[in-house]
Image 1 (tube, rainbow over the protein chains, first blue to last red):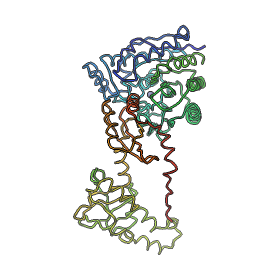
Image 2: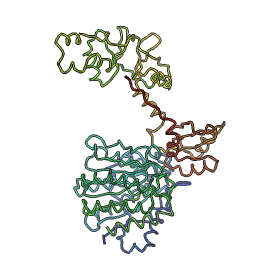
Image 3: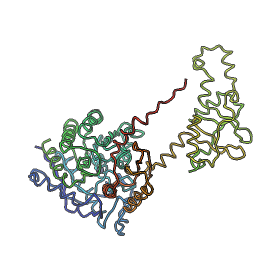
Image 4: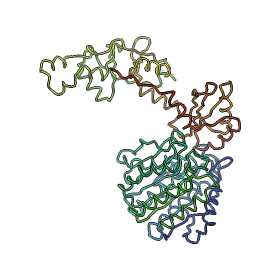
Length: 316
Length: 232
Ligand SMILES: [Zn+2]
């Protein structure tokens, strides 16, 4: 059995998003309780939130953006950059704690104390651009983790798999020029879903051309199509790229019961995806894998999805 | 939405006395396919395209199988010998929609834009028009497309727009399309938000049918099949 880290902190619930917003604090207890009720907590190494060093956030975001975010938050603004990004007075601090916790998990995996980890954080990150908050996201958690791994441990190749039902525009744009970070995303087709990027013909830019891969999925599709596309697009690409660490943007909003999308993945479909990613990590990355929560809004389904997710990480 | 806003203003032009090789070299260097031909007063007198040049210079010419005399004859050709005289042009006050219809009818790849005095003020290409329509669709901005089926009667669109506006959601665009059922229309609001679950429920409560966009696509497919004409 693997040594698997589990990042969870009550303080991640402090970021409030207001009325009729799907990215609610209750998402996290759903995740936590699913894992707890299955009796998995004692098998996991629990990790708590902590403040990150700002220099790591600055490897991804402009200083000016970070200041703008802090100022907007402390001046009591309830919206930042886009109407989707509703916030409260502690949103900035919560976003920092999310990054800090993830970096702590990364450190433990990279130092060999853990094989892998699941980070249940809020707010999510993959839509956040270098200079702009978008789609419920403020700091691009996964991108910061990738840069941290490269700079602190001299890792050359990081692979990111993003199975949130929305395209991680922020992550793609941050690494589109960079041949050392391979970004793969599978998501609902951008003509039918937010944010409208992640088309099949986006492959990265300049030196990074060929190190971005998108698999858009048409509305109404589910397990079969995901399996077909990941087998066609992801597995061969990672077999060739040979990432030394795999990061996962784990969004659970492609579930058939999640009303954020028209994709119909089953609970078993998610398990298949995670199992395959774990196998890839075992093959090329010594099993090193850090998974970070993105979307997933069905409070009814999150418990089982989170439980299966960490169970697969534990069993390798 | 006028042509003057979307056209290219710094037009690269050519003199009618220029050799076609010079025109060809200019197009390659500037990565363009249409060269308006103007007189000394910048009045439009013709247009030459990369295709005009290609048909004037047979492929074999480059393979050097032609006799030297034939080669010389061809290389003496100047722009005025092969240009289209009195090309179709439009005025800067034309709308983008006008330009689109003219381009569609005339099957050209670009239209010179000429003012009332006959002077060339710009050129608008298919590429410029596409950019303008990408802008109209709003798809340069992050957002979500809804697909709503409505009865063909007055006030339906207003209801939808009001309901969405009340949720504080901005519009990237709204398209209306015919539906197979003649009494219905499909409305496609492109909303600049990720957060559409609530507004979808609200629209359903108002009695609107939210279509599965794939279903709409499949329903439309056979009826919209157009066979492209291939030039002989
Ligand atoms: Zn998502």
